[in-house]
Amino acid sequence: TSTKICGGGAKSKIWIKIIANVLNAKVIKTTVDEGPSYGACILAMVGAKEYDSVLSATNSFISVKEEILPDAETVKLYNDKYNKFKMIYPSLKNLYENY
Image 1: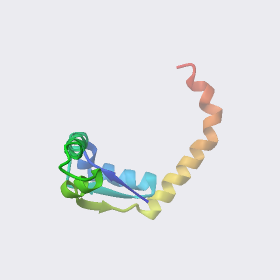
Image 2 (image 1 turned 45 degrees about the vertical axis):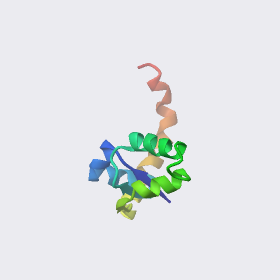
Image 3 (image 1 turned 135 degrees about the vertical axis):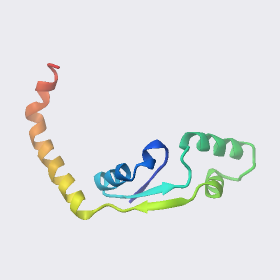
């Protein structure tokens, strides 16, 4: 599995690595930093018949800049911590309602 990332958060290598480890998935950083505006532009070009499809327009403008892979050891650590959290959360759930 993989996911793509762009925008402000994509400028932080640490943040991208955290996402890869939490999701246990390859994170693909694109050459484009402005996701929403590029998306709107691509849709407009498809609507104006400049491109046959969103996929063909996307492939014309956006490419892979870098691929970040999860670290198996860190993924295991995150999963262990998350499983512990899931075990204790039911005991703490009512505590949060008071705040």
